Length: 385
Image (cartoon, rainbow, N blue to C red; front, side, top):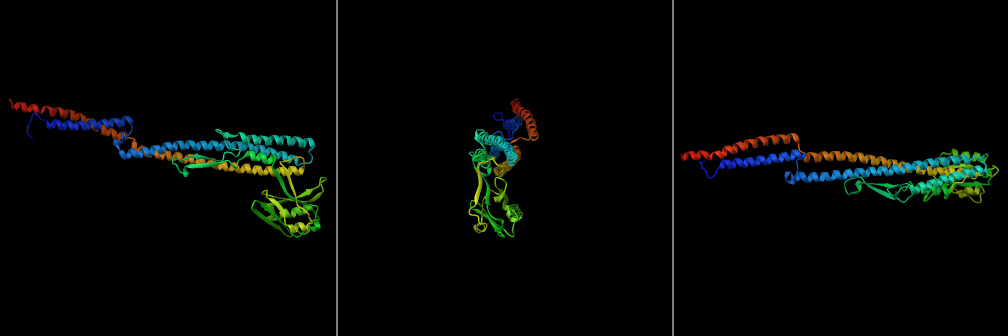
């Protein structure tokens, strides 16, 4: 290459390389100061798109975790109130057991009834007052509550919570005004008329259950007949037999109640054999404590409601476990997605520091070489002597 003064190609080449080094050092400084490998889309267009999607997912899951925690709070609120309801029902049952004893005077039964009425009213108040953020939970109006526990807009991202089975108002209504049935009784028949087998039918809606008890033989008493029925495995799985008594305590027949609360009837041929003209129902309006028999009916009715509340609590407990499991799963997803986003967007400080040091050294060298290139034309002047 010839020696010229007008154009210093060496200086231009050195300046171009120096500019490239300065740009590289500037980018390294930006990455080291921000901690990010991608500060603009030009740094990594594809990586920026992926990182943005991951960031949105992480942000959505963070909110979803809070939603799931809200679900836990709702379930715990309902479960706490149902726990108190179980305590009230337990006290009601104690009162019913106490009232089933004929040692109680009229005044004592009145006092028992007064306390029971107050407790049933408290159940109704609980049903109306327990709410979460303005939504009543235990009065049957909440319906199905949906909680968003995922970052996506699909059905798999939601958990539905239904508190319809935890309706304390219906429990209170059943114990205050609902029909409390002790089954069906058959009275005023002779033991000698009892056939060798009896067939009982339990009816609940469209479901019918028939149970035939054979080899009853001739019972010696109404209690003996009840015992023979209760010893039959098929019968005791569905029904319970007890002895009915007159006001003076004289046994008059048997009463059969279904364990699941179904309506009980006796085969018409068996009723004919017993010379029973009609099967009399044995029920009261709400729980009553005015007699030992009605108190026993109250015990059965309260047991049904205790079972209902316990079933509702079990369902809520399962939902709480599901929500807590969802929170744990969400937190794991957030951790893994954040790590994935970090690998794309975060700068490796050690690696970038190596690049920065390299650029810094090249920059210093470039400046020195640019000075040398600029002094090269001075040699041409010497030729002009």
